[in-house]
Image 1: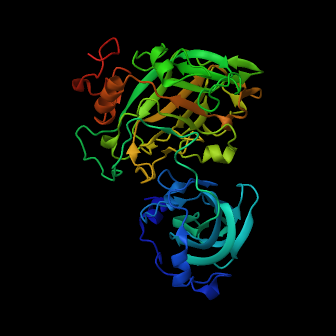
Image 2 (image 1 turned 90 degrees about the vertical axis):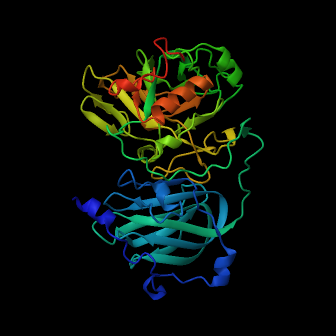
Image 3 (image 1 turned 45 degrees about the vertical axis):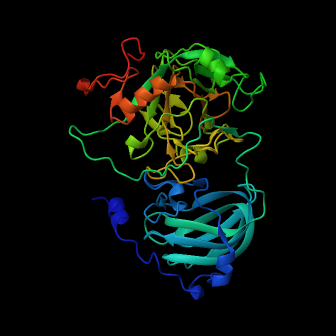
Length: 470
């Protein structure tokens, strides 16, 4: 058994033991009256970290009020864990529940913009356990910035709770930018069940959408810049053949498709890849996986018609892309894997690949939001957060471009490799998407675009030889 695995399965030491105030600079217990006045501001808020130890220890694991999930960092200094409260707040209390791997020297910092940081607490004598810190600060962003680990492992937090009062206006969930779903889904409790073992074992729960480039080098973006032709950087469009700045669900449903499945009229697009300023198009059909993003794949529902969102950001830093909950494998070419920027050189004759996963937990109410992300969320250790309880199809882009050799002049129209992002505007024929979701994802199969698993041929296919419902 590896030392990493051993550390993670040991019972946490002193998780419920408060650190004595005299041992920690500036740490004193809040009175019960003060604590009662504070509100937990950090629950299920967007989280980011300098690094991540394992796939089951994401940043969000420290902000879900679940003592069984955690964030863990790589085994080096410094490291940080950040939460975005969404609005400016006055911070009065921070509670850190450390796993065995704790921070000996660290700061609690706040920031109005995620760039300039002010320290509101500092210690060089941390001893782990549960630390309840009385602080005084304000900001939209709060982070733990660790400079010295208390063990040979990384930093590991079961929970990072931020209390205080909001001084800004909470983001609206209706109004400009919010698009209400005509048939909202309510009353859903995220599934925490583990599907029973099967014979033969269930190893996949997915189907493919194979789609070619349908429109290229078009500076339109109907999600971010709706109604504004030419307002965006250049995009490469796949799937629907009519996508432009004025695209709507109705126009997509009336359009054609470059996907092998006629029922998939979804619009997919991403920044155009450039080599010495010349656009490079993916060759042939690209693989767009539809998977389960949650542990209980039986709970996945087809995404609603008209759902749209953006995955990643053109303004991402390398660290943000590397530690993005949907980054998966990043870039690869030749023998290189898990690259977080376009490699400087790729084996001649190879191709540049990227894999990037989308969020798969929906709030059940909105088809879009002002930032085109707030209505969606990533699962936390395989379970959707209560704020976004509806598990829908998880999309994973697997794109390939015919470029190799010296890659010094290869970049995206949005910038460096880590600016890679993509957009999805769902226009599937609902019965077709439902059939593939039920047969392949809920059924635990590894399906091609017909919904056929070659390893389990006895289970049949969801679609006929023409990729339509029988």
